[in-house]
Image (tube, rainbow, N blue to C red; front, side, top):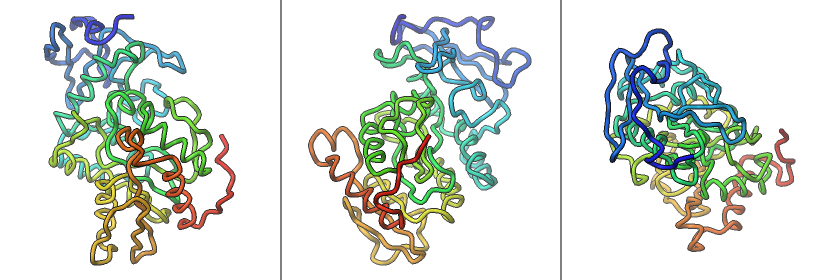
Amino acid sequence: MPSGRSAIRLVRASAFTQPILGGAAPRGHLRRRWGSDDVLRAHSGRRWWHSGAVSLPHPRTGQQFDSPVPPGTGWPGDPATPETPVATDAAQVARLAAQAGSIEELDALVSVCRACPRLVAWREDVAVTKRKSFADQPYWGRPVPSWGAAKPKIVIVGLAPAANGANRTGRMFTGDRSGDQLYAALYRAGLVNQPTSVDAADGLHTSKIRIIAPVRCAPPDNKPTTEERDTCHPWIEAEWRLLAPHARVMVALGGFAWQIALRLVADQVPKPKPKFGHGAVAELSSGLKVVGCFHPSQQNTFTGRLTPAMIDDVFRQAKQLAGMREGSARTKR
């Protein structure tokens, strides 16, 4: 199988994949040059997707998918359908997020969002060009919805998807080394049913935690702009509205996640504002606890700033604060 940019070929309008809304061919076609190759970008009404010329098999199920993956085509855990409303600007994000009445509905809306042009272009470009080591796999290439229980006791706040991790697999913290560290620790703590998270069909399950993030698309250089963060914020705000009645503890992975967590519960935060630190605990007026943890990035884990034992200490503490027994059994499949 050819890899990287060499795998991309000019896609003629007549050969382009069927628009996700069904029916007639797309009304217009825009072509954009990537190095020496062209990628056809089709537009149909509000919803537009670009795809590599070749469908590839999912690494576990074997089903063929385009990259990015159109909604409702059978990707494991895809919450959306071709009829899911698509937000194309900040105002639409705010409106749809406010109307979401369930976690399932919110996940679907998040997973098809197209409100930030720079992030849409980047996540889809990565999905088409691919890292060489994953050139034989389809890439999710869409916003990554949160993962976990709909009524969790512990909510984990991350940052943004990795370009060749969650942007490829479609699941938070899945397919990269940060996720390897995180899920191994969650398993040791008895919060998930297996120590690895490889792809969206690997059987990973939990009834106790949920992983959320303030930015749902992989950003260039891992740096979303302030405008992009603000545009995305209504999604996490709506999610917290649905999770808050059940959550007892938030674990913030890094200083930025700490700020996001406190922003979500701004009316409950004591003064002076609690400062982030590994193992720091902010006790809020509602009884909710926010626990700080260094992010399990390669920079932190490779340098020894964050060790497995340190992550274990945080989740042991989170379980205790959430009123969960230390020896509680791991979630079964």
